[in-house]
Image (tube, rainbow, N blue to C red; front, side):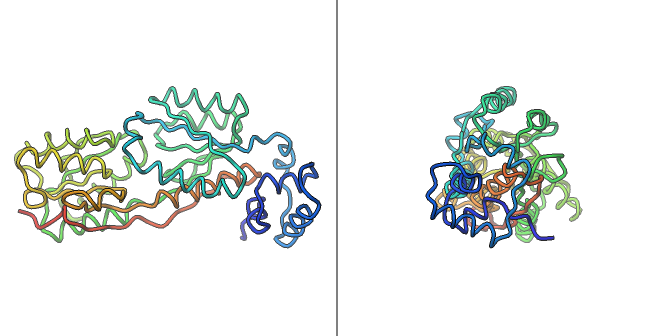
Length: 338
């Protein structure tokens, strides 16, 4: 079944913004006759037809979409994931004539309040949901408010909510295979907050791989994706007996924090302990030692999410999209087991 043509497609092929397409197709002022004719011709060539929801809302669009990041501001300042994700979102919004309304909330409760206010004030036409948890009160909220929403790195099946996901398993499995081939059998994990779906999925992939190899998963400690959490995890794990010979951290920042504390404690990386991260942030290639990681594609994730959200704003049904899978980037922070 061919995907339905939306005004996002018309705008792209006509070389104009979504706002211009909407004005041209709804016979609103502010568009030259030549542009209107080009938009109409492009729409006809593509086989575009207006959706009922698109017609009913055509006079009420804010041409903004919202994102409330539920993290401590200090974590966001040091975590490049969101910069990559937002750049991907903006690359699609810019072509479509939309703007991103970005807010930060330190708690889930505050995030829910801010999403409600954005919708109640009619400031946004749709929202992105990051750091999805189970249960997640935002899902019921957006359904109650009747506002289009896309959940990031969530599995499909949420009624009325689009999802975009990058598969964690290929990269994590490749990383763990790499460590096993280097002789490691005691492979620890530093997770993200376990109520986040993506943190749970990364830990689950780690456990499943080791169990399939008849290796005991563990130990595992919970972090919060910060440098400080990685440092605390090193103090905990490297004092255990027997201590792990390798550690997989759920993001690169915690891995870098872990390495710094390990060296401060007198351990050599990777001679005494191998350390790997997740995300593939640029600074990992310049850390000492350079960081083995599972590379993700936050820019691509943002692009897919923005396209899915604009399609829903245009009246499309909820959908699911998968970006390219994660992959291993082996560097100097992992080596043979001691």
